[in-house]
Amino acid sequence: MDNKDKIIDHRVGASSHPRVAGVSDPRVSASPDLRVAIILVSGGMDSCVTAAIAADEYDELAFLHISYGQLTEVRERKAFNDIADHYGVEKRLDVSIEYLAKIGGSSLTDGSMKVAEADLTSQEIPTSYVPFRNANMLAIATSWAEVLGANAIFIGAVAEDSSGYPDCRPEFYAAFQETINTGTKPDTHIAIETPIIHLSKAEIVKKGIELDAPLHLTWSCYRSEDAACGTCDSCALRLRGFEQAEIKDPIRYVDREFELSTKDLKQFARFRDSRASELIDILGDEEN
Image 1 (cartoon, one colour):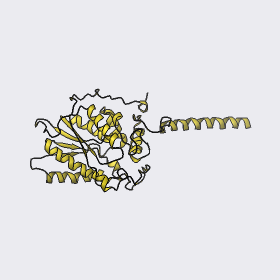
Image 2 (tube, helix red, strand yellow):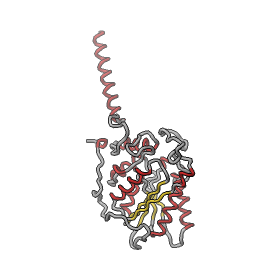
Image 3 (cartoon, helix red, strand yellow):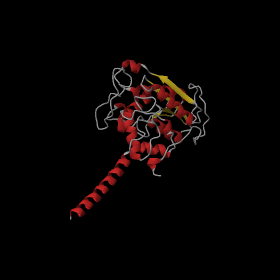
Image 4 (cartoon, helix red, strand yellow):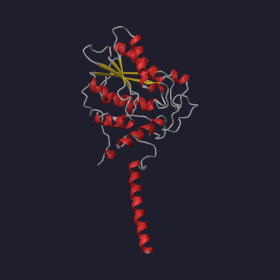
């Protein structure tokens, strides 16, 4: 069985990270003897793999989920809690910044705008861009980090997305780091960590497999909360990543049960071409 046929099955409770399940008061500071990281967890694949990386590097994790009136808010929150349960994370903070929906300007929050079909070749900013969203999220994470005494804020930004999302660029995070350094207490030391920012989606998939990240619990779709649509930008990037990594995506997509993969199509094309060559040879012999 090759990697394409592997089914990812990392059930809750099967985690190798020995943390006690349960939710504690998010206002309680962590022990000064522990290295603590806050992870922004949307419920998507990138934030899940980022959490897996943080789990290997820090003593205690605190998961932060921020909803902003997006179409798939309920499904993303479920994914957040499922991933938190998998890692036994006690400190969880789930907050809403629905004012971004009131501001509008994004197809994820504005009902008058349609979520566009994926165009992975476009260099234009897509309609799914939520204006300056990541800055709002980092500000909240920084406030919580000061209260907890956390050492780092992890965010699953990917530069591959930065042509569409300006707040996914490395220089944006370098600038925000300066904001944290300037705007927090003198004895506060919080580092922004972007461990997958230079990885492709395929490399992120492989990293997730390497770290036993629960990719089957994640949700990436911009449109649907049942079966992923497979055609929005987020689904298309995710599917391409799994395809290039030659690993089967474990979540369910609409009308994809019988869809052939690129590998399958290539194999069919080789078979078709070989049979065509044989037929030409046979016809040529008959003519002679």
